[in-house]
Amino acid sequence: MKNLIIPLVNWGIGTIFIGVFALVCVVLALVVYNMANSDKKNNDSNDLDI
Image (tube, rainbow, N blue to C red; front, side, top):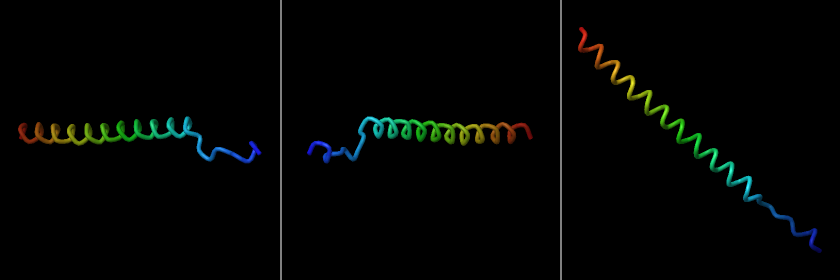
């Protein structure tokens, strides 16, 4: 009878996957934010040189 009770969720692996996914999302958001800020700085410096 104990063999019929099978856990459907592995909370250890699921928690790790959610943590890795959140970390990747944060890193990608920071990369996009830094790229957007670096473009603004380059455009401003080019306008002042003209």
